[in-house]
Length: 433
Image (cartoon, rainbow, N blue to C red; front, side, top):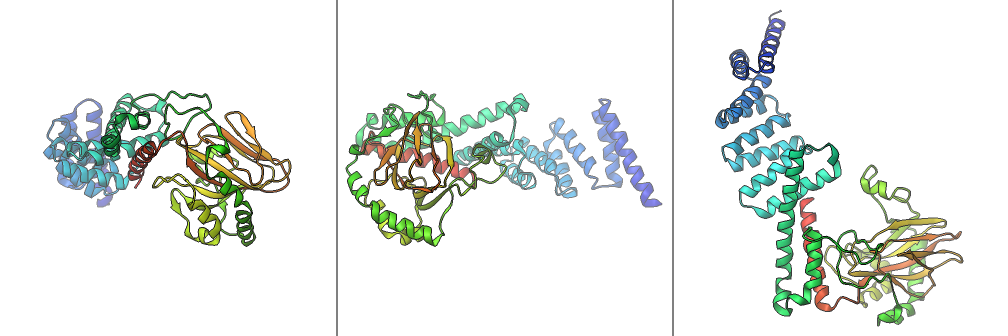
């Protein structure tokens, strides 16, 4: 009976303290909780309340002690860890605040306030890149998980500050990435790419020169709004077309072996991307066999198709570390459709070498213009225009796809393009690790 009586007594004391608090008597509630601690020194609710009461009085040293004890009493409680961090922050004990925030996020990674304060603490510790990355993580989390319509005004304000810090830091990194090109060739030589960087970081709005031109990642302004490019614009076209039979023979070998192909669109179910690509996500209706993926050479596949790999190496494919080239066999099953979508950048073009094109197959449509494939004849287009493709036939369609530079970018601009995109991509990826 003693344990039950003790538990009942503690509960009664806790209720009495909370009743005083609800009646507006903060100090009276604290007095009851302090008395409770005399008989139950590790009572988590009492410790948490007394930490709160101390912080309300600006006594952050006492708050730290209470919240530290509360964290020990309830080790899985993220709120106590966060309040401990805020108490250290109130004392300007920044390393301790940062450590407590890390512990908070270990317990509850979704606590957006802890994510944001982590950025602020790193700012105050004069670690600008770390602060910007922390803020970027918070912004990306909020974009993916929080409804702006339900967001409190102070949280919106904090996220806007975080985004401003991210943009300012990335803007400086882009400037540094272009500095040697500006020194060697002058600012005018890279002005289009500096504008692209300004658009990327939000310093200027994009002004698209065509209603169906919407690069999803980076838009280079002042390029001609041209969806399809003619084969005569590139000096390597005849050499690639002459290799059609060799490439097709290697394709047939790997198709017969039946390995190395995977769905091109492959997002985890339940994600926003999976919903966007609903109907073709994780589907072999559109599958690919990659020679390069995100700029990385797929050695096994290149070894299985040495002639095709050598051909790709011999031409002006776009190379941006971590991003390009992309090169693959692209397989579209019978009666399949790739829905309208936009590519990521308008500094590149996509090249199709049609290898297997059934009769009445279908077409690729870009910016409202549809063009059919002809075996052995290259099709070259800017995939940052809205585009789609379909195969209405009863047989499979296969093309070799690779990307090349937009010919309207000169060699210096290509270097600048690579610098801006690589800087932005590396910054974004760093935030996700």
